[in-house]
Image (cartoon, rainbow over all chains, first blue to last red; front, side):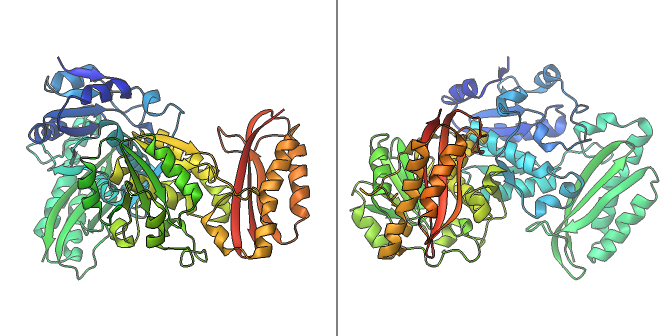
Length: 275
Length: 275
């Protein structure tokens, strides 16, 4: 039986005898992508802690906070028995109904996902900082799927001297290339097919890696063919700064894309080198 | 001989065998007020760590960052031998020359000291969070002299679930009432006398505690008599929110004052009850 803790005090008490700890923060709605993080975590420490918490602070007005899937029993059913789960109610993490103190994600925090979702990354970093202070893990595991999140968490850990190692696991995909996401369940059959344009566009960019210009041209061609996909952004960023690279840049890039398929917003990314 | 550490790695290594830790963050220029914090810390844990770091992030453009007194040898001379000192160079805490990730101090962070010193409290909270992550103390000791700082640090610790106890020590004063401050050394003889108006104004407020209105009237009378003192603000705030109380409020208040005496900016505060 998986141990489930709902309070900070009870979790901290339990972790006093847990040895080294690897931590996987999630918003639940667990899929194979999350389970890949858990498996990685199991190889890294004596104890694995998985948090399941849909963080209201990182959802904006009009976003899908209410609609976001929540099913703790289903999540527990797919987790290994020996994992410790932290599933606090909202008022355990936000007893004052909000947090006046926030972690500010800086300029990168207001680009791309941050431009489409104002306040999202400040809310995300704030809850990650809280969870790291509660769990005090030796290592925390994130998925590369949320590339900008990974960049900002790593930078926060460095900037604030948080004593934790950040470990990143490759994006898990369906056989047809679609990146796993808790939001995929909202896709209708036709949308599910249309959504493949995201990973195809990233593959096209990687295959046309002579320059930023060529790569973006190739990916736009793929996306323009799919009339039901509304592109929010597609860009090549420098992994060291998360800023767009110039047209004469060569070296490692992360190609990032966000698009709306029907009413569902999806993101994906792919790392490669520009020649 | 006091042990002095300049790097995060060497300090962390030393603290692995330090038992419980009480931490006193300072900007150096140590006076009896700081030493009262150190004495308190000595009663609270096995090991006392004092940081000496003039944090550039909490100084604004045109403020006294360059002028702020720095004399490590003098500071070490007044500290007890058994204290562990952390005195990092600036680039040890800010290797990138700045911090993109910041702790945002919210609305209270832009009032009073925050209104006069934009960004001050975000910079202060950020370095305190960094130092707490580096030292990982059981208890951290602050002086009540910086009342708004104490309020914001306590709130950050609660909001971010930082696992530390915040202990607050009463303001240490000269016999004539002047609150000890590293900036007092900048006062000329006449300014030193004029500066007494701050503590006298707070005493007058406490003695006229029938209402906010009466208390502020009494304190303004004292300050208006001292022509060389330029008042920045004087207000009564609710200790639970750090917001100004209303004219019909009764209960505990913190009277806070900031004023310029010559070119030196001083602050002080006093806690009492409104009837």
